[in-house]
Length: 350
Image 1: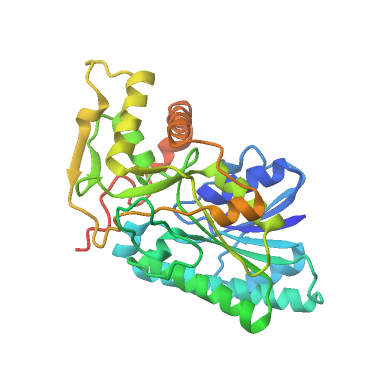
Image 2: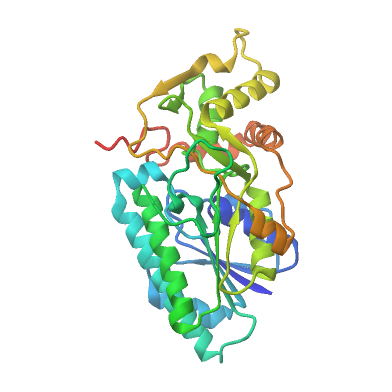
């Protein structure tokens, strides 16, 4: 199977490519190499015969048409997106252009290619999205997002992803394009760009900086190890029912405060401070994010019963592996700390 992956130099996209190439698939990585991209994420597969790279922007329709025509993919896995909520608050325009207009261009390029090749039966357009499109949940643990939960996006980021989800489903209904949609919970793991909570906490702790927690730290997320997510995405694209949506969760709900304290405890064991204090002493509560959703949680019944997929890593196991990876890979993360916005508080709404 030849897979065209958009955003393949990003966090989740690179995990998908590493796994797909390892399983013998041919992969074309289409990436614009924006601030959060890093081709070093793919060093382990860059020289493999089944891997190729196209430096292109999904907003460039002519480039997309050329890439489809030259590479003739069997499957599209569309991951390219602006993804950081805080950045969407400060600059929503980029999110509209990439996540909405870019997805429109991908759909039209895919539709053109699909029709010109006489609508091959195995062709799939797999759109990878987020559970943030569903809005916020109450604290009741019995209430979770299902594939039928009404959309209620609260940030420019989630609104742009909700828009792209609707476009994908519209192209399926109107034009018959064979699509799949997945909505995932919060990802974490190796190669996570150092602007999201978990890598920020790890790297700030190593530099003895404050560990910022928005509000009172009670916001709850369902944490999904990125390598588990990559495995789920390949399962969906291989076995998922055309036109179906699948929610992918880690089955690991955890408040932000508990998460940060767990990371601190792992660091206390793996890299004890010279002064004998705990890294938890660096925890600092800061002004909350505007419109901060209280809780996300995925009901994974559909993907578990229909495709037989479940996560393999608990949040405790995944965090330990993640912390160790950052301790072992300073050469990867140190250059990224110089990129625009990294290490700064963004998304205050001012």
